[in-house]
Every structure is written in structure tokens, then in C-alpha cells.
Image (cartoon, rainbow, N blue to C red):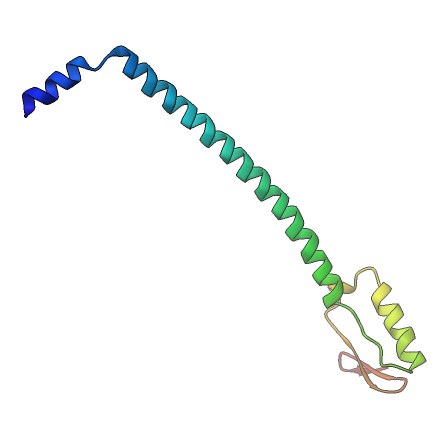
Length: 107
């Protein structure tokens, strides 16, 4: 059995080595191209995810006014157009028509 294996190895032609080397080089190039594609897709998904997160934040930090209340509508317009509304740690809460709570303070 050992003699057969040794014989096979000795008869392995240089052309076979070149073929295997060429195939491995092609496989490496294919893998490198796939890695580049994955990195590109990852960057695109990261940008898309960031855009979607910004949209969620805009929708999440949105004051919805009570219908048929012009004062509440004005408050909503002010809060929703406030440039740093995402950073607001205290919320406006409507208690009744024209009466709001901003944190612990009634306004």
C-alpha cells in the first residue's frame, strides 16, 4: 500500500502542480472579490440603517396634537420644528385645553 502511494506521488506531474496552483490562485481571487462585495454591501447597509434610524427618531420624537385644539396644534408645531427636539429630556404633556406640564412645572 505504501509503495503505491509513493509511486503515485512520484508520478505526480509538474503540470498537475501548476493546475492545482492556478486553481487555488483563482479561488483566492474569487474569495477576495467576494470579500470586497461583502464590505461594499456592509457599508451600504450601514448607511441605509443610519438613514432609517434617523427617520425612526424623527417619528418617535413627534408631538401629536389633540384634534380640534388650536393651542395644542400650535404647541405641536413648535415642538416638532424645534431643531434639537431629540435631545429634549423633559416632555410636554397636555393636561387640558391650554394647560401643559413640562417636567414637574405646569405651563
